[in-house]
Image (tube, rainbow, N blue to C red; front, side, top):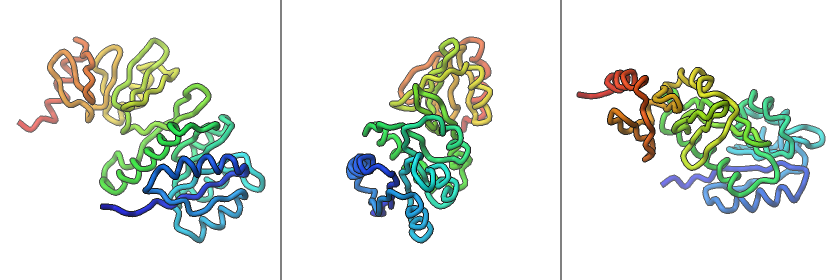
Length: 240
């Protein structure tokens, strides 16, 4: 059993925000809060001389913004930005932060961030040479939030006119992108169109009967136009 506790620090100039994150983090026994900081400069010096796994940081702070801090330490730690402002999401994406969440932060959203961190760490341990260990990802706008989606979390995508529904297990996200657009973006990761309304990652298909596929216990229809191409692709992966 792995008894390692991930070392965490929290940075925010508001003590109430720190207290909320401390309370949420205390629910996860495999994480250890090492220190909290009101001044991001103090946190920057601490990270430089200590081994830290995960940083929760506000963005709008005196002396140093959370985004600028993330730029300086992104190769040392995983960073989750927690902020009241949505306008920094694109810049945060460009420096590859692990997650970007808006205040007020619910425990459910906090748990999603924790699970994203654990998934990344587990992938890096189990599959160091696997192409998906790069954690290929993109941000989607969900309401007032920008949420980072790992490509390997996607089970299927359903087209709904100008919108698409991206299903990731128990979570799903509605994005203002056409299915055709997402198909083009994701085909490099072996996503395939199976129906006029659905695209799926090939590696998530567990059964195909000619009329439908099963993806994580969910049955999705296969259109006649796409049936032969899907069958041909699956045949290239069969053993016998």
